[in-house]
Picture 1 (spheres, helix red, strand yellow):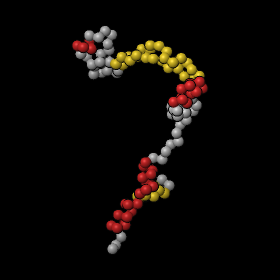
Picture 2 (cartoon, one colour; picture 1 turned 135 degrees about the vertical axis):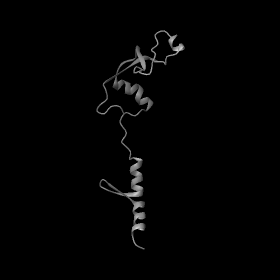
Picture 3 (cartoon, rainbow, N blue to C red; picture 1 turned 60 degrees about the vertical axis):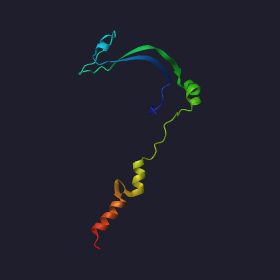
Picture 4 (spheres, one colour; picture 1 turned 90 degrees about the vertical axis):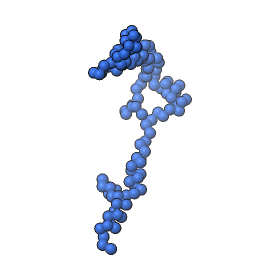
Length: 115
């Protein structure tokens, strides 16, 4: 979900043309207006705005006409429990911030306790 606080009131989309830089070669030099990229290249593409793809739209209208019919999520999902936490619960015990590994305790007890 891209919005932490509240979503924007309006949405607009622009169409861009991306021209990626090319390694210096005879073929690349034959293309007019081409950016060539050497070993010190920091400019990887050139972006040119072509036109407005979707005009400014009220977010409520966008939600009703596009988001809801497509059944896209409109709110952030609740974070699920991590796999690591489920595994810890399965194989050990947690006391506050301290994790005690169950199998390791068994091995230590078998090694350290006199028989």
